[in-house]
Length: 321
Image (cartoon, rainbow, N blue to C red; front, side, top):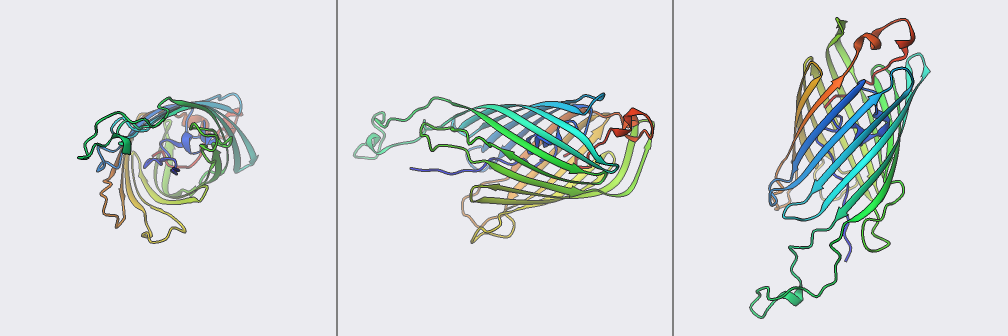
C-alpha cells in the first residue's frame, strides 16, 4: 500500500515568511516573534490542527541574521502527528544601489508518527461485522526522526522581490521503508508593492499601497499556484486570493479561495485568514481558519537614513500577513 501527500500551506504565508524561504530572515524587522494557529478542513472530524512559532534577529552592525522556527501538525482523532524545529541563517548584501540579495540556509530536526489506532483490519472483524480482537498486522507506531535541509535566495528592491527556496533537499526518510521519503519541495515567490501614498515621520511609516503576489510550488508531480492581492491602509491590511492546481484534470480553475485581514499597532500585529475549498467533491471538507499574533521591532530611522553606515539597511516590500 502506498500513500502520497503534500506539505500544508498557510492562509497567511507572509506572516510565516520564515517557513516560505530562509532568506526572509531579518529582512522585514530588526527582530520578531510570531505565533500562529490553523484549523484546517473543519468539516472533517474537527479538522487538522497546525501551530507555527518563529523568531528572528538581525545583526545591525553587519550583514547577518539568524532565526528559528517550530511547527506542530496533528490530524484529528489521534491520527498523524508531526513536529519540526529549524535553525536559520541569512546573509544580506547590496548588489547595486537599488538591488539587494539575501541568501538563507535552514537545518531542521523533525519527527513524524503515523495514526493507525482507529483503523480496522480484516482479521479483527467477526461474522456479524463487529470488531472482536486486536489485529495481527505488524505496524510500527513509533515516531520516525529525521534531519532536513533547506536553502533559499531573494533578490529585492524597495518595491519588488523574487525568491526561490527549496526544502527537504536531502530527501529525509520518514517511514519504516527506505522508500518512505519526503520529496524536495521547490517554491518561487514574487510580488510588487504599488504605493499610492507613503511618508515617514517620527520613526513611523504610513502608507496606502497595493501588493499583488504570486507563489508557485512544485513537489514531485504536484504543482500549486497561489495568487493574492493585499491592500494596506496603515494600520490595516486586507487581502484576497485563490489557489490553483495547474495541470490537474477535472478540477475547477480555483482550488480554494481565501481572505486575509490584519491590524498593526506599535509593533504588535494580529491577523486572521480564511480559506474555503472550491470543489464539486461531495465530501464537505469545510473551511480553514487561521490566526496569527506577532511582535516586530522596526527602526525606521535606520531604514530611511540618508547618510552614515546605516544607509545600507534595507527592508523587503513583502506583505506582513
